[in-house]
Image (tube, rainbow, N blue to C red; front, top):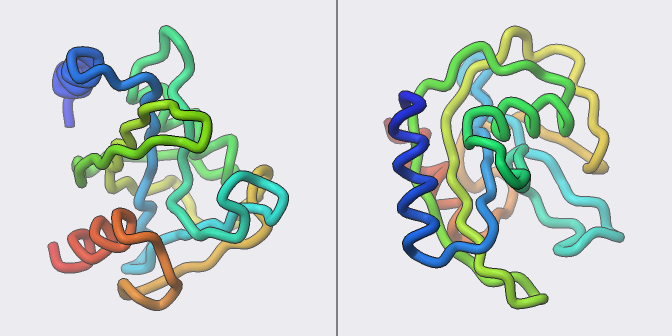
Length: 145
């Protein structure tokens, strides 16, 4: 996805009243995808998800995606391969979020270093680890492509 297309997503989100953009990465290494588990003390503690997080004010989606992957895993994105879609949700505090997810490859998949999660796993098929319906749908779509 080109930067102009990412900017279009941001404009669309603003027009839709999205209060917080979220970015996430389906990191593929040799046909396996990285999932990370939230710490029990976090909001939605114990849930598995793709690495990612909030887009900071004034930050573009590309920069946020690359920053979040490094912050959460220590891995560096080598290439953003494709856009996998978005879904909306409301947080417990009432914030309207939209999560955008991309498939990416990393320079090296060795040496995952967690800073915000308590576990990680590499999966080779949807359903290996329980995910929420939205994330499961994205993972299924990814493995079918």
